[in-house]
Length: 276
Length: 166
Image (cartoon, rainbow over all chains, first blue to last red; front, side):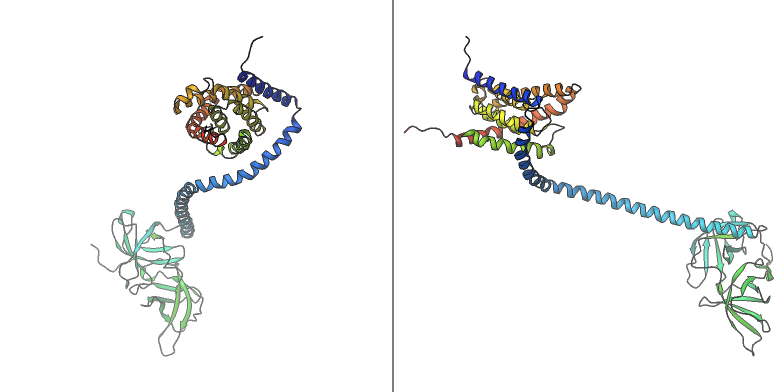
């Protein structure tokens, strides 16, 4: 009979024991024992795991903070980019609205030809009510051409260059527009006051002008085409000892919110100046 | 006496291995703390205790894994044997020489586990498992082998202080 070393015998015994456990387990005989043995082990696992996980989180938190800071910076940059995009889209939407309104206005007077131009600045002098637009002689613009938007009369071109023009608003003190009150059918001339108020002078004393009446260009004088809205009467000043009465009007155009304008290129203003 | 201390320690290591080590993986491989304890204890010269520890700790490991109960026990007993093939003499010659024992033990341990997995899931990609699990785990085991053996040596001297003849 061969002799085995104690080590070999113990090893073989333990291996045999493990193999027996394996077979019995696979046969399903150890399931109750497994459940019983697993209970304290699972309890130990349940007690230790959260504490170890907390320690692990504590150890890895500086890295997490750095990651979060980086992520936060990325998100802030993304928010800034999206805000910029929202602003751009809002601007485009407003521009589309303006262009649609201008198109409607142009369709209302199909006999006219228009050049659309963008306001690129206001006059540097605070005493002058004038604007710069991005169209000039290259676009067919000429001095004296009236400028309108969807709300009504804005002004007229007073200086023209190849790619830009300067226009005087009807609220400029130097400007005068021949107008007609729509209901009373009387004529007058606008005069802008230094405080920005727009008045109509030279209204016949006998005319019955009432607040709310619409004021249109009359076409007289040849500076502006007729039938362009200028404003609405808000008050009337009538004194018996004066030859004419006056009316204060509110312009139909919001001069603080001008972006895109139409220059009426088909209108040739009459001029008293000798030709070249 | 030794087993009374080592079995609770191995139970703690089993829990540690299932609860914490998944967060410290190299590729898909993890350090095998229980294997290191068994091998280190075997290398202190207490092979029988190491094998009994391997049996108990292996069963505990299998309770918390999908491997059939007993497979890890078989693997750990075999690993303890392989690690002490040269009766510890070769490994004790130099501290780093013991790394060879850990390397062999890890190989045998994973060979048995791999065989069992292959029997349960015949479609297992062994090459992928070797590259993603076994090799990284071997590297981690080798890294932890020296401290594990030093701890085991200290524990052994504490539990079994050398007799001094007066």
